[in-house]
Length: 254
Ligand SMILES: Nc1ncnc2c1ncn2[C@@H]1O[C@H](COP(=O)(O)OP(=O)(O)OP(=O)(O)O)[C@@H](O)[C@H]1O
Image (spheres, rainbow, N blue to C red):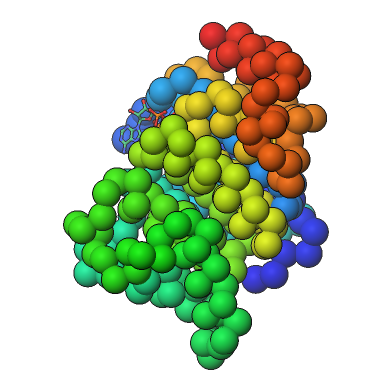
């Protein structure tokens, strides 16, 4: 299904698991082609929200709409980068990324363009050298980069990432953030990106969603004036405005 400039609207959403309320009274509008970072203390339902949008969990109440149409996750192509990477033990890195692209292209024959896109992704995510390795032959950080490349390889309407850089060391993480934004721009899509890192929430989010409570809900959506997918993140990190925003987001989270 192709989206024509439509937002995903969640209205009065709640989710219960085994009778326990996990999400309550979620109201949000996710604008097409925008990156949202999601922050909040542990247990506030961030992963549950992603699972709901990806169709892995059902709604208990409320509606999800795209324009006038009820949003049904199974009718959309959704790229997912889960917390545990979600790689299959019998697929090499190369096979995993190619398979994701192939599935998302539906019945279209594999073309040279697909080869170029996949090779570029390998280069961007610095995983060219491990294309023939299986997950049990990769480090956690390598698995995470393969999982990100796989998510980006899909021609999806949505991209959902659950702490995608958590297994990377500080230096690799900074590189991955920059590379991710550069790669993301080649196919802009509605993106929800969970992070526990306040700096990362500001670097990567056009809008920042704050979740709190148990059951969890969205308490704030912050427009991020510092976001610019083209800018050098190292330079941004050194700006006084950035410090100021980190400070106020920390306060918000506490
Ligand atoms: N399958 C499940 N069965 C029962 N409770 C669950 C299940 N999945 C999640 N929960 C509960 O729902 C709440 C929210 O979990 P969720 O993983 O969505 O939070 P989170 O904000 O992503 O946490 P974290 O930041 O630690 O990853 C937690 O209290 C968790 O224990």
